[in-house]
Length: 131
Image (tube, rainbow, N blue to C red; front, side, top):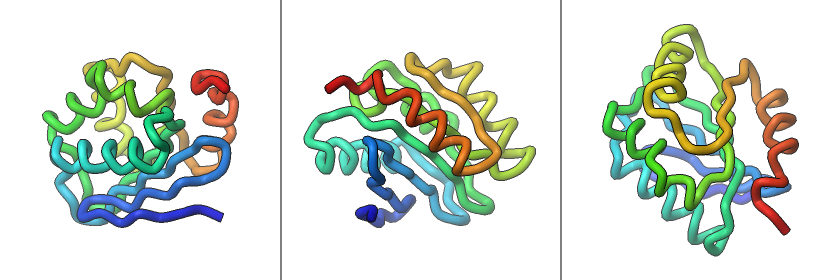
């Protein structure tokens, strides 16, 4: 059973095994403030313990370049141990590639076609969180 927190820009689902699924809602332009609000909720709910983050994005939703930079900044690794991005379509794949290759988050990050493969990979990253 998962707990859900709904915010203006996203729905955050706290799943088993330290996995947190963040789904950015349809029709959003995600800002750095939205990303920080999401990080704050994860940090509070997990009491400072890092999470394995699965990210999905709704239809007609994108992140500003500043939001991508903020989400990949070194301080973001304070909240997140690894990222699994679920790709929605080709345009989303291009944006995710920019995030991974240009912003270069300092943690493991992979892109996946579906939730199941993303969850499987995140389960393999559990060692990054520690006991």
